[in-house]
Image: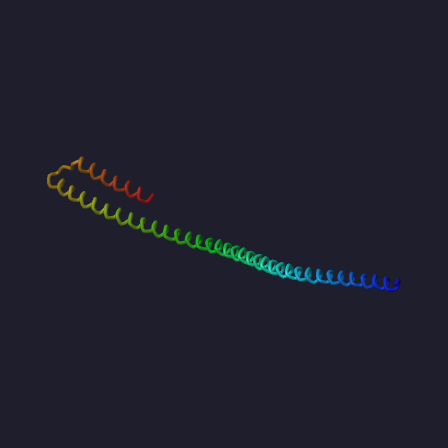
Length: 152
């Protein structure tokens, strides 16, 4: 009977070992499956984060390049506009100078005409009216002053 008792204990110990082994095996398999699921989710998260980071870097790089090109083109445009404005100013000054000369000549011609008329009248009656000459000089001076103001 002692042998039976020893054999029974051995069988009992074998059953306990088998059950323990099965439980540990089930836990490992179940835990491994969860780990694989967590690892897969982690890889997806990592890839998403990596793509997002690369997208952000690409957008930042594009914005920097666009900003640099925009600044360069703005400077070019400012330089071109400056040249055009200077050329337009030179043309305007030349036109003003030409107009002043033309108006001055016309004014001189008109003044000469008036003086000739006055001289003809004076030659006919023999006297020169100083008030008329003074008025003519005053008109000429006012016209020249106004033209100088236009040039400035």
